[in-house]
Amino acid sequence: MKALSRTGWLVVLLATQVVVLGALLAWSASVHGQIRMPLEARLPEPQPGIHLPARDLLETASILGAPEFLGIELPTPFRRHLSFQEGQMFWLFLERNLSAATPLVERAREAIQDPEDARRVQDGLCDGFLSFLYEVGGQRDVARQNWAATAVRELQASPLVPWAKKLDFVVVSSLAETSVGGLGFVTDLNPEVLLILPEHDPARLQELRLFRQRPNAVVLPAGVHALAPGLWAQVLEAPVGTGHPAELNLLVEGRDGRVVLISGSSLNRPLDSLRHAQQSLDREVSRYVGATGYVTGADTSSLQDEIRELRHEFPDLILIPNGNTSLLAHGALEALLGPRYRPGRLGTRVDL
Image (cartoon, rainbow, N blue to C red; front, side, top):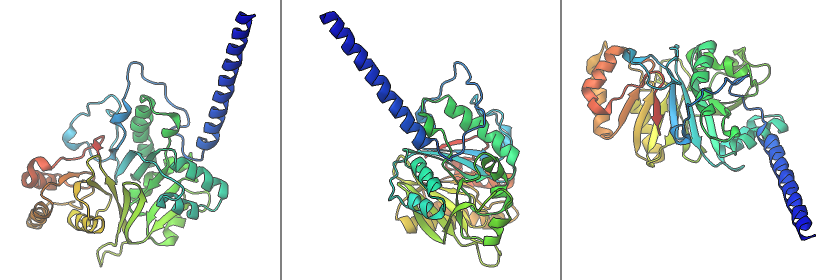
């Protein structure tokens, strides 16, 4: 009888564990089966024998739209087949704990009209991870290819939980074609994607033929706006006379507590953006990644003067330009900054 009793208790315990596990899976599906874009309509088969520690992906920004600088081959099995596209594209993957009172969650709730969609987006933002795109390049097919070659395969090879392997939102610096031209690959799978934009001409957003309905857009005025712990949007007015609207940069707190500035702006020079960020946050900026506006080396004396000022005001700054920085400007930057100049070619992963 004792043996039967013990067996019965074991059966009851096992059945209880199965019920609890089923309930947890059902909860996970309800919370995390949200409108966020799947990485692919059909995930590729994992590559046998290739594993990627989660720490290699977390707290990083990957450059997915830029030239293959000087033709240097990328050393990882995931990033050897990336394609150049006009414009810029970054994938950021951060471990962040958000709550219903976090500014980004509050803004998303206000921007999304449908209560069910707003709840789903909130659940996704609050799952402990932020996986998002900043800029999406100029071409839909190239953007999708580069996303699949990096984020899809790398996340698949990592031990991260399934709901971390989703796209939470898209941030763009402006509504220029080189910033939003690749957005179609996201809206193909998720037309309700949450966008974070700087101030713009409202008619321009409606002209984008990527949306089947009114876009879910958080629009930010000029200034620095807290989005999440250690994440800010820096919205700068375009220089007078350019006729352009405001442009948005990202400010991210790195592992060392200092700030990394990620820019898609080609109008506001690094020195202006850095001064504004440091003044607004009263924090040291350690790295500048992305667009510089140094598209030509025709006026090298002006470039030299600006870099000298940058070195004086930000003596420890590391400059990681990409995209629209010309080869001639690259040469001048390398000569002026030495080891604190690190060109960000296509596929580069920047530790934050």
